[in-house]
Image (tube, rainbow over the protein chains, first blue to last red):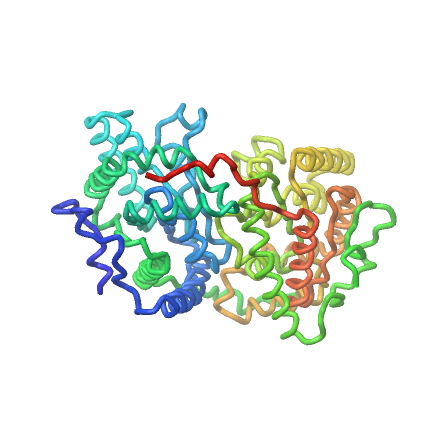
Length: 269
Length: 269
C-alpha cells in the first residue's frame, strides 16, 4: 500500500466515502507488530528530528484534524512522545477567546506557526473555522468559499517561506465514535475527557462529514496535501501517521549545518 | 544522600563552593545503572505527568540555569523526552529582542509561564537579568538588589496562584567546561553549537560564580527553592534532575478530576 493513495493533492474527484475508517491498509498484520514498528520508526525519527533542529533552517507544521474522539491527543502522545521537547511544540486550538475573536480567525493560528528547526503540531486549527462554523450556519457558503481561498493563500505563503505543511484527517466511523464515547462514560478516570457538547455535535455527523469533504477538497494542493488516515484502529492510526512523518523527513533530508573552518585555530584557555 | 542537602531554601550561609561539581552524590555506582534508573524514573514520571495534565488544576515551572555547556539542553532531552508533548513546553530565553527590551525584563518571562496541567521548562530565564547583566556591569548593585526583590515577589505571586516552581543550577567546573568546548571544536557535527561568545564569557568564570551565588542566595525560599546539581557527570546530572522531578510529583500527588455522576444516565445515540 502506498502513502500516495491516501495523500490528497487536489480536490478533483475527492470523495471522503471512498476511504474506509475501519480499514488498516498499512498494518503489518498483528497489532503487536504494528506497535513495535511505530517504536522503531519513532527511534529513527527521533534522530532525524535532532538533525532538523540542529539545521535550524526549515520549519515543519503538522496539522491534526478529526471528529471528537478521533484520536488527535492519542496520536501526539504515541507518535511524538519520544521527540526532544526542545524542537517540538503542540498548539491546541479550543473555542476562541474574546481576545482572539476580536481579530481575524487566522491571527491566533499565525502566532503559533513553527520557528526554524521546530516541529509545530496543531491539535485542531484554522480548519475549525470552516467546519463547526459551517455546520451550524454561523457562516454562509459565500463566506466559506472566501475562507477556503484565504486559507489556501495563507498556507501557500507559509510553504513559500520555508514551512512544510502536512495535514492529517483522522478518519473514524460513527459507530467507532459511539464505542469511544461509551468507553469514556464507563471509565470514571476518563470522565474529564467527556463533554456533553460532544453528544450535541454528534447529531450533526453527516453535516460534519460533508464539511470535511468540502474543506479537504478545497485546500488540498501538491504543496499542502491532506492525508486521509483510517483511524478506527488506534494502532493503525499511529503507524500510518508515523509513516507519513518518516516520509516527510525522507524528503526533507535534514543535515547538520556546515562545519566552521575557523574553529580549527581556536584554543580554549 | 538526601535531596534536601542540595535544596537551598534560604540564602543564609549559602556558599556555592561548598558543592563539588565533580561529585556524584546520587549515583548508584556504575554509569549504566544510573542511565537505567533514569529510564525507570522517566517511565514512572510519564504516568504521573498524564494525571497532572488530566487534573488540569495546578502548574509546574522548572527553571534550568547554568554556565554555557552545563547541559541545559541535554537535561531537557534526557529527562523530559518521554513526556507527552501535550503537557510539556520548553521556553528558551536567548538575548532579548527589541520588542522584549521595550518592556520590563519580566514581561517575556510572564508570557511563557505554564498553564493549568502544564509543565513549562525554562531553558535560561529571568535570572539572566541578574547574571550576565551584573557580570558586565550593565546594572549596578542597587539595581540588582531591586531585581532580586522583584523576582522574589514575581515568583511568590506565581506560587500563590497555583504554580510549583523548581529552580536547578547545573553546576559544572571550569575544567569540565574546557573539555566540553574542546569536544565541540573537535566534532564538526557540533560546530553549530559553538559560539565564539562562549569563549568571551568564559573569561568571566569567577564573576559568574559570584553572581550565581548571590542570585541563588537572594531568591532561594522554602516555596521557590534552588537545587544545586553537580553536573560534571552528565549521567549523574540527569539522574539527579529526574529524582528532583520525582520528588515534586510525590509531593504534588496529582489525581484525576472527580468522576461526573451525571454521566451515569447518558446514552450515546
